[in-house]
Length: 139
Image (cartoon, rainbow, N blue to C red; front, side):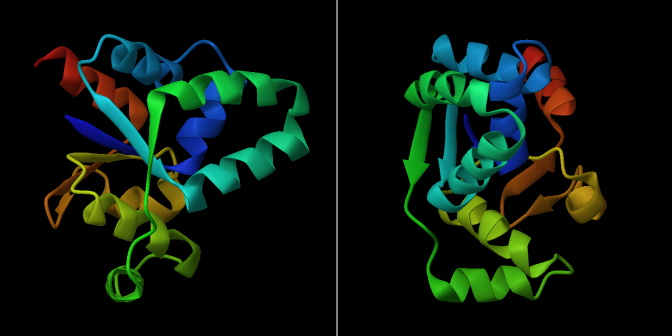
């Protein structure tokens, strides 16, 4: 199963050794899931960590060992995602999740992705990390 991680999930996993975001990396270590993200999302996570918790950057580097960085989506995919009622800054995230054929897009961004939580967009189920962990536990 392939999970696409939004920047806030990567940030949270690096910031705290507890919680669902970090637990996804533990699941990935078993080989049960593949975690992926884009350079766009990873750059955002790195920027935010550098601003808010610079001491957590080494933890992020360790977590990167368990992340597959996918190519950025084609402009037409980003244009498609921009037509969803998402802020422009989130269109590349949705487009990347669809482009890499992720099973799930995991995001903690309830403000911008909240209306999509629990729905499937072009084959990608959008979930919060805690719900992702619950569903993975049932497999």
